[in-house]
Length: 418
Image 1 (spheres, helix red, strand yellow):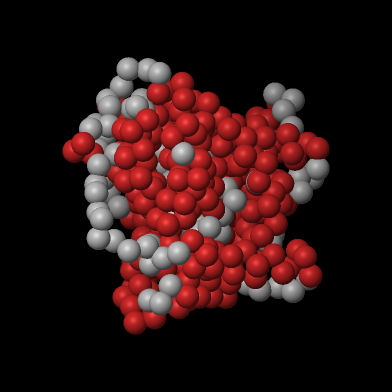
Image 2: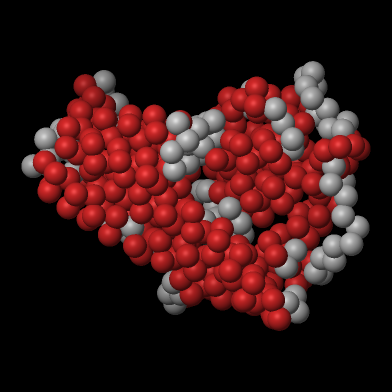
């Protein structure tokens, strides 16, 4: 029997959304939303708090893995490896394939473990320079990066993937592999839409937008990819040979190798501090997300949604992408959205006959559709990376949603086939 009413769960979400829009820290917004919604939903203060704590406790394994993933993220960024990978990809494809090169570079940077907003910020200086040279406007340059980042995000060992895999109890590597085709589809649509935007009248890239730094020394390409390559090898041992190496080990191992091979061992302490600073925010966010997920999971919401699907003769599996889309849109965060949807609906989807890995892939893809709304940090961080005004950044959101929706459709098709 559910502890809370559906209205309680809805009130939790609405309060959290309103507070996030008012610029209250997302973690506090989620916690307060969960508390008020739980009480309004008939749980009582003690039951509500206990459920919130239980939900947060369920996030601890994900939080631990995400904290250790900061070693890899910090290493890739601070050693210049991420920038080197992007530089090589862009230079190989040249100006004729500029849009593809920018999208592909951001996709790869994100796919190897750099957070999507950091991936865009890393590629942005290169993107703006090549955009000006090739005659592309800011809108097309930004969409190429954010769309490519969305494609890379669903095949990466990033917090959203870790949290989704944890909620469904599936192998992280398996989930990353499951979304390769949706990622490629999203990349293709990104290129098409970015080229379309390049032909529209929009703010051009100017000299003032371009950051030129001739003093920075980047590592060689082979050194730059050494860390990510080790991570891929370690994570691939389980599906290939049945040898399980937990991401908690694989991700920091790749980061340490990256630091050592690029001869930056003397800076290891500062790089580790930088890496953990980049994951602390999302770790705290996940704790807040866990409290809200606990309330929603213990409510009638999931059963009422299933009843609505049944009344409309719609299959149960649609709950996966729809929940990912709605929860990510509500929180304006891929990680929070995927986590809430996975924590809440994983058991319902599995009980409904949907394979856990497929349900996880569809939720994960769904969480990339409207996660870039203005009440989230991604919207502002990426807009700031190319010096774009608010109203111009807002115009990119529908195109980003099309990219995310493409990966959802591809993920659903794959589920139906496999």
